[in-house]
Length: 114
Length: 112
Image 1 (cartoon, each protein chain N blue to C red):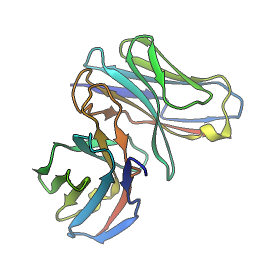
Image 2: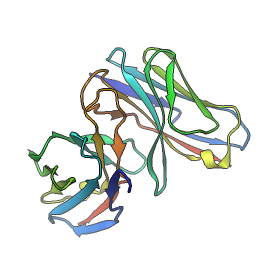
Image 3: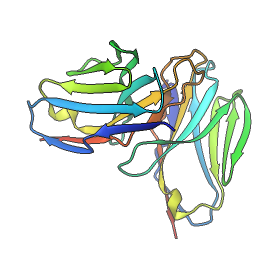
Image 4: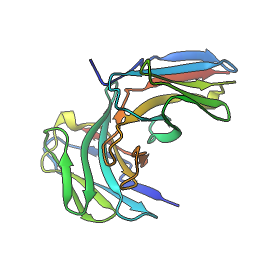
């Protein structure tokens, strides 16, 4: 069966510090991968998605970046965090080529920027 | 007009009640419809998946799609306190590899 991991679970960082969140998927090959941010009252915001190694599409302009160094690894980064980067970050995967693109989410990382 | 509209609630019901959660959408190209359940401080989990119009039942849960009205519903029968969560609807256009469009979620509280 497929499993998706995210770490860390919670993170408190000062403004201006760097960020690295990691997501890995087990039990599947060549998945589509996604990063979302969920802020209170604002729903899920798609940040990045990837259809393969090194292939990243950005949905919104921001000071965040994403990378996919391996097939089942997706990393969210920032060089300098802003207060507005606080939120709940979710990684998700879907089967490539599957109609309907049902996505399966990880447990999330709660980021607080102070 | 937003692509997907979902009443955020909160919705509070007593245990045993029938709950109706709804979403409307504007894009008639949507063909795949999903409901996710998200407990507090957890990632969303897929609850129901439907294609095209009609009903789909899974235990106490029924997903209903009315494509002519661009309206989807999730019914929960005999609601339990463990159903207390945020419910998100999601939709996908027919092209593979297209990101889902999510509603903002409805927060449900079931009291015992």
